[in-house]
Image 1 (cartoon, rainbow, N blue to C red):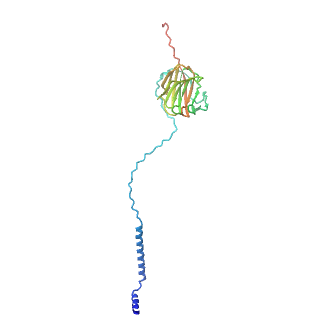
Image 2 (image 1 turned 180 degrees about the vertical axis):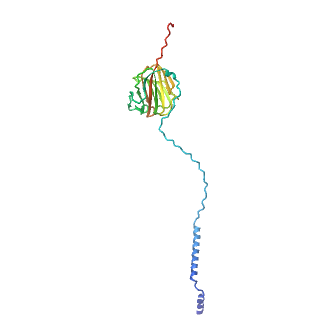
Image 3 (image 1 turned 135 degrees about the vertical axis):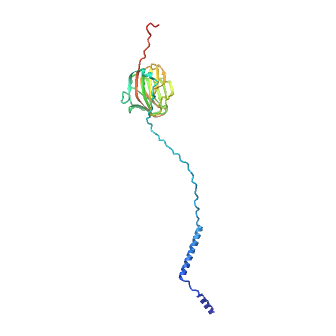
Length: 289
């Protein structure tokens, strides 16, 4: 029994302990195996993102550039006058120059301001303005009281809306009676007679293409008055004629009238007034029946 144990013990001693370097190799191999197993396990846990799918590029429509038009302050625009005048007979019928004003100085205009508007001399122009809707303002000229005449004046709408009026009143009397030649800011014109009883239309409001349209644009208007016959011109073109014998004489006056707008401003320049040549009364030859 003792021999068997000894033999067994002896048999176990036949196997020597592995050398230290072998143990190191074995440990390294074991470590490498652990690393591989761990990497495999982690690779199984990690979700690999699929490769990006190429998205087709769509051709976008080319954007059309948007242009913003700024609001501009109106500026004076040169407008040529007609090359020829259709009324050469007027020139041969004019007499002496009665009154002329270029407004480079005050020749007697009653300029000033009121609650609804006013008149002033600005940059060698006579400016009339009203500051309320449905308002009327006028100023008498220093020209003498006159019966028959030919007048011309340049008018310009500075601030004006459709329906607003401006122009010339002639044969103006102390009670406010007068004839009125009115232009509107939408290229229309009319003629009327104003008495204490009210206004009588001589020429109704009419669209006329003789007017140069727009703000800050000059228009030359003229009136020929002889007795009860009147002729009216815009930019040297005759636009109306009328007859009326109620008011034989009076003063010359400028006016401005607002309708719906709260501000209307017009200006006047190069004002001239001529007398008319007397038309000789035909006489019968002696001895005629």
